[in-house]
Image 1 (cartoon, rainbow, N blue to C red):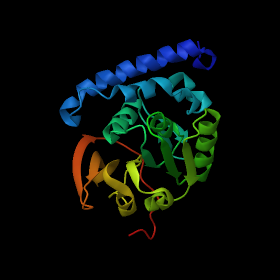
Image 2 (spheres, rainbow, N blue to C red):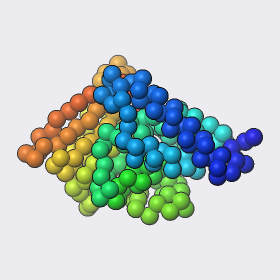
Image 3 (tube, rainbow, N blue to C red):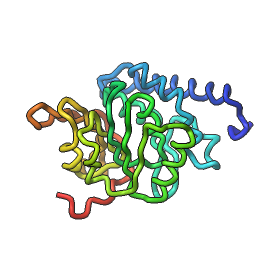
Length: 231
């Protein structure tokens, strides 16, 4: 039966099965990530957010496969395992304010919104920003605000942020994002390491403004675009 016609209980079973696959992959990659299990709140968010609402209608049969899917404009909705891992690495608290660079379809923002008080998300592709904002609003995520723009500049009006997440890979993390991260906060981003290699890194900002960096896992993300004139 096509998932387009599945009822709510079937969708819930699909999400529970997805969570089980994510837990298995987390165990398999624990030697690299240092995490043998994810925060149960993160897994609950994955089990709650209706991923099928964020993918193109033609791909809804595959919405709960643990894999990335195209969303048009040369962009993808990330693999659920990666969404869960990156969210877990942020170590969010319920009162946190989060900045996301790269809204895409809005799925990652919805997962963040299940855990944080407020999410501000920037998407450089105007049509995607508009579509994601509409989907998030329709699903009742009123603690997410999306705008179209160059995320290299962050969103200074709402800084500082308790956590920052970047969902596209660049040669370096934009300095504005580090500046807008609160002391003690975490920034999670994929970074290019040459010859097509990318690594997921976690930055933790210290009270004196310096950062500690840790490489987590080899990943594959779409390129980070924009940044003209950014220093």
